[in-house]
Image 1: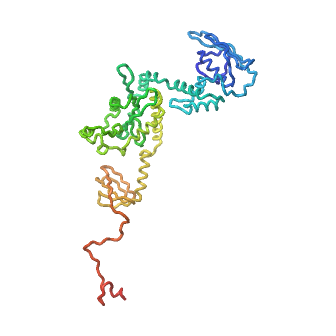
Image 2: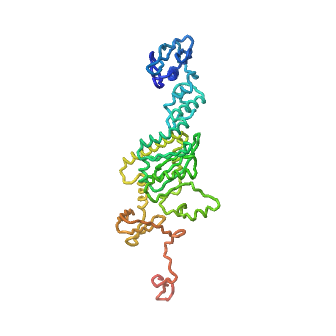
Length: 463
């Protein structure tokens, strides 16, 4: 046997790959059957156990033997009868060590965490599933050892980076994976961009959000990320980079790697909160020669797709909250799994889509069409129309004749050319006047009676 299993039936001549594994299996069985044992003899050659209840016949003996070119532990004698009742549950089991608890919870813990990732939850789980009461300290040690077995240690994780990068590129052809070390062969930077993100970037808007967040492990560091928006206005991660901190050297290396992903797409807008407002002396003189268009939002000539903040990056950082506590290789694997799940779910959603636009765009168009039904449209000329709703007025310019215009629903389908809409401000305060205001040069005609010569009436109205 090569792993612990509490559900198997122990019998004579069973073989175990090590003494430690044999002991772990016996401990799991005693927890399952609700009894305890004591060690009579234990050395490199033999191990003898018997039940902790006095005069109980339960006992076993295992010895070490050479099988081929390796040593195995074989169960040579086993008396499994318990003449005494074991119906009373044991609340404090001597075989319930933290290593045994680790084996019981190891299959319940995933790489990115689970419900048993805290000692308090482990205490409740062991009590509910196995009827044992363990201390918080024992649960904490079991949790730590189980997580180390699954995720690996921090030191070993950095040593595995070259192999991780090789396997990642091998299984994801077209990905960009780079790492950098210093002169003493110590880790500096690691960059990862999957092929799915690179190919999907060609169909996303030309706005890239870059940001960094601190890692929460023993050695610290910073995780830089680059993301954009897809056609459905969902977060689309492009690349991740592990660096020492947010400094000029790390940002420069990260941006140089990003050039390989952007490719030949022009007019890309980079949104970042790195360059915050500074009161350093002389900063104005340094920025003005560069040009306002390169650092000011108000003067940016590129399309920003109504994006003015880095909230997308903050949302991505929130999704990576648990991963930031892991060793570097485990963290990168969790990020890869996250992208795999996101892209798979979105691909399935698109496969069942019957409309020509994405779900978000369809909803926006539906709202706009519903709003346009109550608008009133007046023709100015063949190329200019006025649309009026409850609160605003719009002027619509159609610079070409190649269009379809439905006056009733204000649905405009432009085949060639561009459509622009300008808002006309009325400037009217209060209730609008319904009675026509006469001009100064126009006087009201005075009525005069033809019979009596009086002003203000005629003969018909007077009598």
